[in-house]
Image 1 (cartoon, helix red, strand yellow):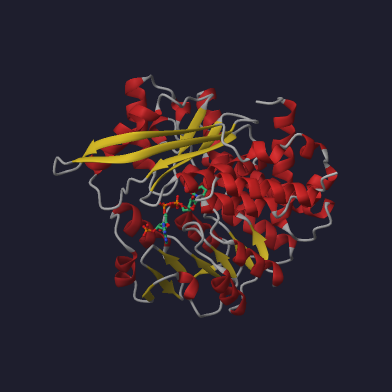
Image 2 (cartoon, rainbow, N blue to C red):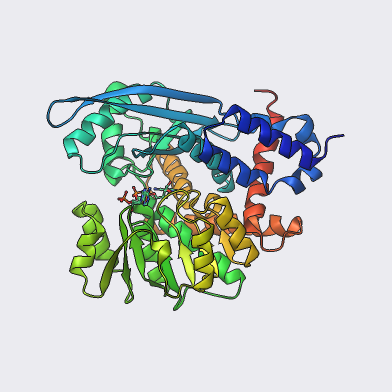
Length: 448
Ligand code: NDP
């Protein structure tokens, strides 16, 4: 009889052979599979059902041309895509990313992680992801609008409030969601529930912009509480300076931490007196400027080129909020050497497999992305509920539900790790709990 270990290994080899160039996707699959042996030992039916081969294959991948004209009247063409990965527990749900690095491997890794993240929220949403290799950076509002209209002209054929509900991600914020919503409405009808992350005036939810950053800090706080610690007076390193990073800065500071950094793809700012949230938002959101401008205006801040994870000073807590694979084994070793005892991920897959091994070997408390950054999609699902009820909840109500959801996700990860004798391995706990729910729903629905 095939053992759990043999089945998982053979499945992974087959997935590698079938998707040889999709490195990010294979990495996300490997990270999950590395934690699944105990669950396959407990559920031999997963092997007979060949659940791994089924779960790694998207239900549908849509790819389309996005033509638009730039400010000089020149014709430009980008590629648009949507990966509708898994609808076992609800309509596909996941963001759209506009960034020049977007390709099928990136969208499949993000869509794959989204399946498990979404089920951890306890809300009825399946997993999907989409986007384009379009770069909104440096474009005029009119260029961004023309691109978004062209993108939605095609995407609208494949989405809907009970089918697939996209939201934002890197390069897609309120402005882009607004333009896409406008075009959807023009081609179909006013259907608030077709996109989330909408501006407040037409169906957006209070606390949705803050949700991923706040949720991350709530989740990290749960880990701290369970280990008799708190954010008070802790030195926190944050990467990124976009949506997630900004609200992580704000909430961690509110809980008494000293957040000393933010970063972008060129460099990072260190401010030993604490990052100034208002100035950060002014520079990034209102002026759409770079962090060099923040450093020029704040006397105590210094700007450095390169990765923030090269920082050499003392750190207690690291909150990566920029992008995938920003922390490798070497950077993880540096964090450990500089004192970090907790890493919680706002970005998706910011730590590579070597980095995760370093955390494990050094007993660093680890809040994996699938669990720690689920606050964004959770509040998106709450936005869908408000849209179907045609009601808007108060900030306090949404924030309190977000807090409860993050606390529940942590409790699930912790209890599942304990149930399987895995100590404080929250990564394995969250992966296993999410996997059991998805596998159970897929098997109950038969071969579809
Ligand atoms: P934004 O576009 O608002 O900000 C992205 C930030 O990351 C910017 O500071 C950007 O710098 C930096 N960044 C992007 N690419 C790179 C790179 N290759 N190297 C270094 N820095 C980079 O995106 P979000 O804040 O929304 O997303 C950040 C992360 O959080 C992503 O991993 C996303 O998938 C994840 N996430 C987001 C959610 C949301 O609700 N928005 C929900 C869950 C996860 P620059 O301006 O120089 O590009």
